Image 1: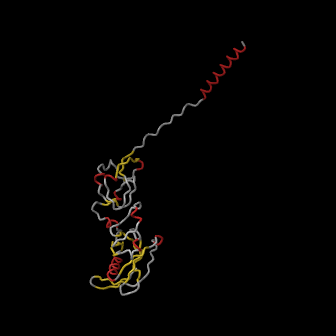
Image 2: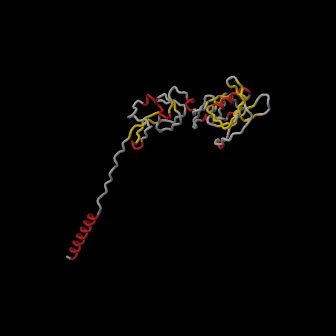
Image 3: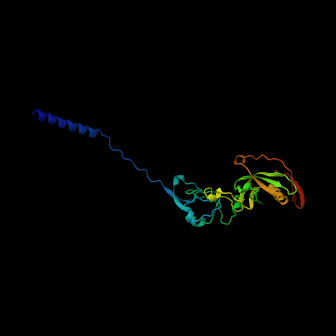
Length: 248
C-alpha cells in the first residue's frame, strides 16, 4: 500500500513539474523576413572594356540594381529601353570593368575622333618621327612622359627643348589593355604623338625641321616635377617672319 502511495505521489509531482515547465517556457520567436528590395535593370559591362573600344550588344547586359543605390547617370531599362541598340557602336572613353554601370559620360559618339576628344582644352597633338634608337629602345608607351632633346646635324651636342611632355600615342596605339600580354612588350613605331600647347607645337615643329629629335623617358616619380630650364632659342617662322622662341 505504501508503495502505491509513493508511486502516485511521484506521478503527480512529475506531472506538476512538466506542467510548470510548459508554462514558463517562452513562446517561439517568429522571424519576419524583410520584404524584397525593389530593383531596376541597369545597363552594365559584361566584359572589361578598354579605351577606344567599340560597344557591342555582346559586351553589355541589363542587371538588376537596388533602387536605393541608383545614380541618376546610370542607364536604366525603364528610362531607355532601347539602350542596347542605340548605344551599340559608341566608343569607350575610359576603362570600364565588368559589372560596372555604363554611363554616357564614359562614351564617345560613333564618329568622333577619339584622340581629339581626349585632348584637354588648349592642347594640340603633334606627331614626331621616332625610332628605337631615339625612344629609349622602344620602351616608351602611351601615357608615359618624356623630355624632348634636339640635335642639329652640324653640331655635336644636344639640348633639351621641352620637358615633362605626355605621350598620347605611339603610331596608332593610343592605349593598351594592362591584362593583354602585348602591352608588356615594347612598342617600336615610326611616330610618337605628343600633347603640347600651341607654343610648344611651334617649337617642336621647327626643331624637327632643323635637326633630329629624341625622346628621353622620365621616371614616374618625376612626373609631378614641372621645373623648366632655359636653353637656347629655336628659330620659328610666323607670318613669313623669322622669330627666335625660347625653349622650355
